[in-house]
Image (spheres, rainbow over the protein chains, first blue to last red):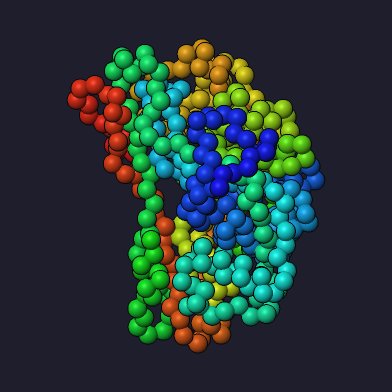
Length: 215
Length: 215
């Protein structure tokens, strides 16, 4: 299944970097911990980071019921969500051809509040398992009060674009021929550090496997 | 010097996480490789990742002269820029108190095109040195044609907010007292990988020190 770009989700720059497979969109979304949610407030843009999780061709966004961007997004206005992973810095022979390797997804649509209790619980499970896989079953479940204090929005992935840059610099032919400067990529890696137990834990605790074994 | 928040840049949620020192804003911006630039296009929000660099209390944004978000932002319309660094996942005893540790900066303002040739060259140096420190002096300088093909915007940092979460989970007292589940933080670390030389390099090349020695 391919993406269905509309004019505003059609990539104008660097078309050779547009990736049209829906699987690529899913992979970019699944690899990121936060997205950037943009809404229009009083005619001006507002963009804030927020947690999310993907369920098929829907992403769920959540936050406090008091969060401004979530409140705005819940009123049926257009939203835009960007997810970006930086994979490295591209050191070209020329300043101009310096670049970054990255995976980027941008979604346009209208966010819909998730209010049905059963669907809201499902959305929170998706969100929790995205941010902390294994925690939904391990941690104390949400109370009715906690559920009420959480806003969840659903955003359809129909109108989305993916752009990926990978590989070596794209220097000008003359610069490559001159062979006068080093060029290459400095990869940026992320990895999980050692778990830091809460100082308020009492007694001896083994770190659970869903934390120690996280990919 | 403290930040000067206006209503839209005032943090409503998690006020205890708002950091008011301008140095904290600078530190968050300096630690990130990309920002998310949001503009309003035909009444709808558009947010895209883009490179940037900071010079005092100004950030410079750049991209191709053809890039839609840059073109829109250059017309004197309001913009919003978010920079986010994720530092870890907070595994609470309850699902509800799960969170992330992060450093976040949001800037509101009007982006101004940088057209004066001397200032544009300065802005490109700032941008280049942010993305690839040492490359401005090492790499082949931009030609007049390359300079013309690059849009640079300046955005003042006057209206900005910073929000930082760090440290252990903030579980409810009852959950802490129950001591029934592990809780803690799984830190997310980023580091530079081994430089990957461009396959088009001819002969033996040592990787330059500004690449191998990057912090």
